[in-house]
Length: 306
Image (tube, rainbow, N blue to C red; front, side, top):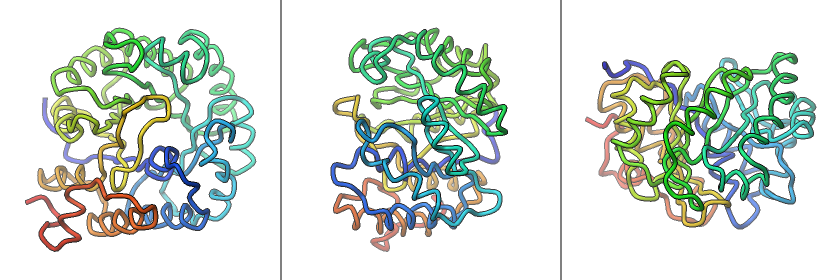
């Protein structure tokens, strides 16, 4: 299968990246982060989530974030929505694209959202139906596609079942997430092959965490399977509050370095992203996890991966 000539990157740092930060990130920093990333050329920047502040306090100011960001024409600003109350809040904030989520593993579903996989689908169906009726685009996330911190191995057939259900609800795209970052290239190929029997590859995105250092390798394996949409996080921000030990998302800078080195078009300014990665890492007082970004900022890396 040929590698795509153009790839769409969904930047998830402002939501999936920041949500696990221990200290509350100031509103001004969140707004600036979204604006810097959208200015760098991303077609989509996940800007926040409308979840209970009791469970994810970091996202409590998402309405204010959406009120203050400079929305650019042609850029999507999706927000994570778990239920009807969250959808109400998203609509009030003039959100035009939402993401909904389910787990491929039973144990993670029970720990994360306190219900079974089947119950999670039943809960989401009216949310997606109402969102679509309101003219919103809806993206679906399936977590734990390669392994679960509670159940262990996750059969690819279980991933396919959940992905197929989300498409049937009305999701235009399904992002398959290796939430705890344990997947390897061969395993990821198997997942894609299984899911693609039910969901077109053009409607599949991949979302990798880098716990075991396999994030970029898994992006490459997915590219070779014809996948052309990936989630990534500037400076490798992230983790998962319900997946102990999971490290951050695969770093956007490292993914861009790979893609540009292969001559794959993204429309994204690598240098601007690397500078933003250094900026947000300094603001958060954390190490910059993007290897290509660190090399560029130190003056020893290039911008095109060649």
